[in-house]
Structure formats: structure tokens, C-alpha cells
Length: 113
Image (cartoon, rainbow, N blue to C red; front, side, top):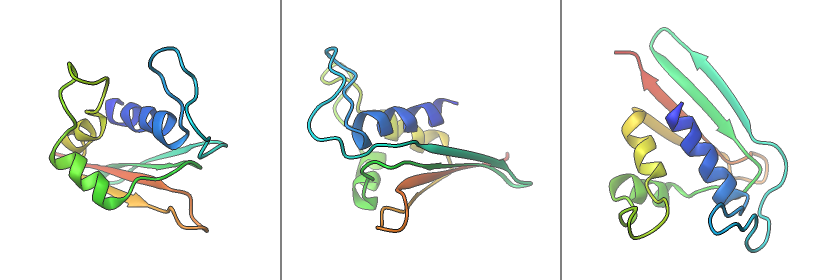
């Protein structure tokens, strides 16, 4: 639940450009509009969450950098730990889509212990 909540918080704040701090409900151009989708599946080996949206995606390079090194501490900025937390919760994170024919999104996988 926490991992999925973090992903959707980032989608709302970054992909759809809605700011949740200081009472602002938008900032700059709206990169995306339309629904986001979440599909959950449980296989014999893993729990998998597929998330797609219609906003601006994140690059693989940026995702890897944030997973390795979170942004400054929460006392210095608001937020900045969401993707890092997601990386600690899930065993595998795949970035998908982002092309003209595919919506951007993530596939989060947690293997059964």
C-alpha cells in the first residue's frame, strides 16, 4: 500500500504538475490530463502492480539516480524520499511506456518470501 501510494503521489505532483505544498493546486503547464490506471496481480512467485498514467514520465537514468541517492533530508525539503522508499519496498521496478504509442508508467514487483 505504501509503495503504491508513493507512486500515485509522485504522479499527481510531477507527471500531472499538481503541487501539494503551500496550497497551490497547479504549477506551470499541465503535462498530463486523464486517468491513471492501476492493475494488481498475484502470481505464484510475486505480487505485481502495473501503473500507467497520461502525464510526463520519468527517465530510467533519473529513476536509478534517485533510487541510489535520495534527495536532501526531509528537514531540508518537502518530500524527496518517495522513489527511494519504493526502491526499498519492491524487489524490482521497471519503467515502461513513454513513447507516442504507450502511456508512461511503472511495474512494481515484490517476490514472495
